[in-house]
Image 1: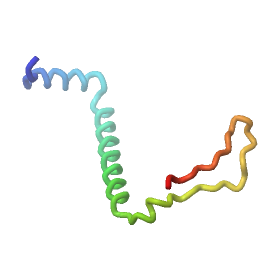
Image 2: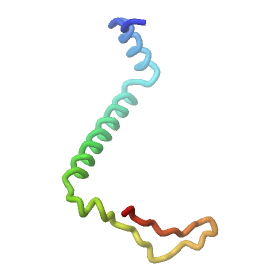
Image 3: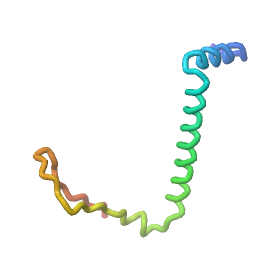
Image 4: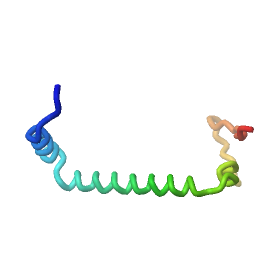
Length: 80
């Protein structure tokens, strides 16, 4: 149960390329990269705001209420 050699990793890489194809792997890599970039930007923007913005999040209010019998109307309260 030691570490795998370079030949093991090469065989795994060839099998993955044969199963998924290079185009799909390129798209997955691109999507993953943009997701990581978006996460980093979100963390950077979230940390630079002042405390007042974090304490009072914006609320979305809709003018028309849905008359669905399965909808439950509740009011969210902030922690004190």
